[in-house]
Length: 103
Image (cartoon, rainbow, N blue to C red; front, side, top):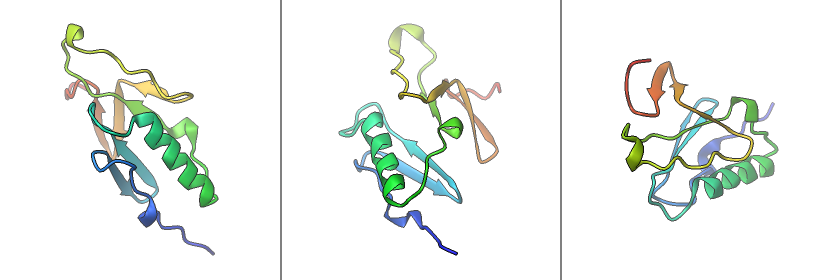
């Protein structure tokens, strides 16, 4: 039996936040940061590969929070192979890309 601890998995930028709970890892990347979402995701994939783990792409989603005003928002391009959702469930709580609670 082997145990892999994500204690050494950290974001590239101190502006970005990794939230780890059991077998879930969530990455928060603000609009203005010195390390892009793409760079952070590549870093996580490299970490997983070095630790002989796989990222389950079918369970990987991207949620972009934004203001509901359509003229003040440019939707970021989705990560390659990752589905960009409008609503995501995290630890039983539903989050909307518009930060609403209608879902």
